Image (cartoon, rainbow, N blue to C red; front, side, top):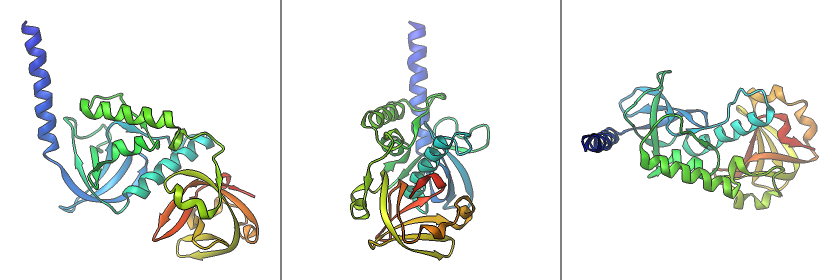
Length: 249
């Protein structure tokens, strides 16, 4: 009987502790996205912190396998697309920092729990190595399993479906292949735009990544197929290219 009450007391204490820590939520703006599970936040009080999202894991950007690096880049891009520049609220569990000094947090935006949302869209794996609050643990596992079953995000089978620019608006947030005629190539600021003859869609390469691509200008006037994450930015549709294997001619 004593053992039973010890367990009840311990569980009650964990619930109390979780509620207390959740009440200590902080707000800030996302100023950087390092990968699918790690971001930087500038808090309202002025300090900045690197934040590791609780309960999820994403592929490694430095993996030796190109396919894994591609998946890591897509997970990072998904997190960037949703969170960068956004106002977020962070809540914590009983362990507030990891061994690297990063904050361990649940990240909320627009009343959504991003840790769960990225799992539901298939751009992260559930990470159960360390304990965290049980209700979220169950939700995360459910979201992860549903995404895998639906073959969405990183679980989508390759080769991805090929669409034309006119169909992209129906696939925002999806991994797809887009085939288009590259009418023009323009550099604006830190970006290179491969513009489709169909207005409203561009494939984009960051200037910092230009050295990875051989003779980009040769793509002008050719039909090309690009693979990646379909986005919308200020009403225009786009796809960011990070590696040459994302372009097929």
